[in-house]
Image (cartoon, rainbow, N blue to C red; front, top):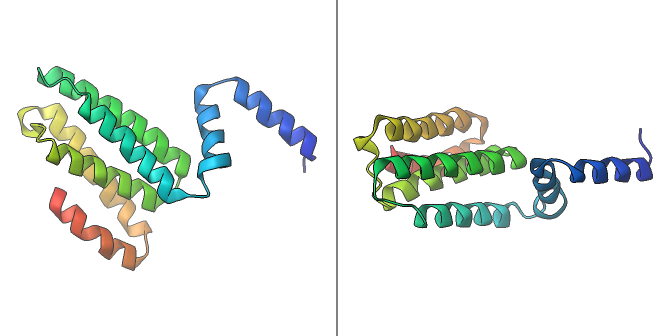
Length: 143
């Protein structure tokens, strides 16, 4: 077992390096207590990315969706909670549909969208039955 000063030294050393370490520490120290607020902030980030999307060609749409999924995956990894993962992934799919992004015009976009659906369906059995029921209606809408 490490003493408190040694743990503090380790945390400060980790914070000096990769941006991911700093973001994870920020989540653990400040955001993990209020998961609803954390989910809301991730959803706002998704909204900002999709609203700033260049729609002039499928290439730029794919690029933006890929970037959004990368960021989303990172935030999901920080949380580690299946409820958070499912909620955020469903939200992305809902936003893609709301924005009327032509996912059927590109095989890559279709695969990215279907990949999100597969990840949602893979995480669902790990939830409590009541939560599964709550999310199922949203999943049916995006499928």
